[in-house]
Image (tube, one colour):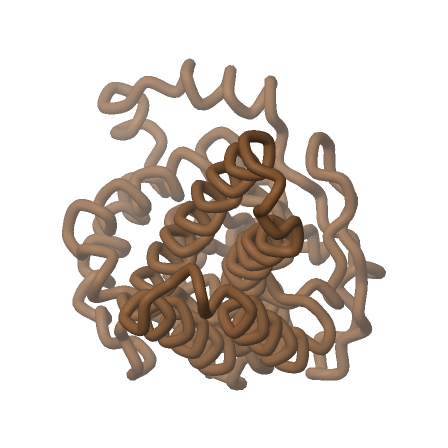
Length: 307
C-alpha cells in the first residue's frame, strides 16, 4: 500500500529539527530510514532544494526554502507528484504560521512540535487519495516536476548511515559542483550588516577623494601621485574587507588583520589631507569590520540531533 509514513521540519544551516511526526513506526526498515534522516539533515546546506533518496522499500523526499527544509518518508510506490505536493503544503503552512526570526533563533530541538497537528491532518488527507483529488490541483506540481525534476541522491554519495559519512560532492543540473569543503559562514548579525555598510561608505569616500586627487594632479604639477595610490589602495582594502565579511576563505582572519593594517598605513600617509575626525572614522570602521569578520566564523559540524 502506498502511503506517507512520517515528516519532519528541519533548519538547513545546522540540522536542528523544528517539528516532526510523532506517530512513526518502529520497524527495522523505519529505524534505518531515521538514520538516513540524520545524515541528510547534516548535509542539507550542501544539497539542492528538491531531492529524493531511494532506500529500497522507502523513499525520502525533501524540499528546502528560506533556510528551512521539509522532509518526508513514504513507501517506494507513493506518487512523486503527491509527495512534493504534500511537502509544498507543509512549507506554505509553516511559513504562514512562524516567522523567520523564530526559526533562525530557535535553540531547542522540536520547539515547534505543535506543528505536528497540521502534519497529521495533511498526512491523513494525502493517504486518502479519493478525498484528496477533489481538493487540490496537481497539474502545476506535475509541470514543475517535469521541468525541474528532483535531484536523485545515490547511496554512494550519501555514504554510511551509521554516522561515518564520507565527504562528497553533488552534481546537479544548473548548479555545478558543491563540495563539502566549501564552508558556510554563520548567519549575519545586525552589527555585521552595519559593518558592511560602513566599509562600503569608506570605500566610496576613498574612491571620490582619489578621483579628486587625479584632477588636482592634472591641473597642478605639485600634487603628490602617491596620494592617489593611497586613496585607491584604501578603497581596495575596504572592499576586500566587505568580501571577507560575506565569504569564507582560507586564512580569513589573517587576511582581515593584514587588510586592516593596510587601511591604517594608507590613513597615516594621508594625514596631511584629512583631519583627525576623518582619520578616526576610517580607522575605527576598519577595526570594527575586522572584529565582525573575526566574530562571524564558519559554521561548525552540525550537532547530532535525534531527527
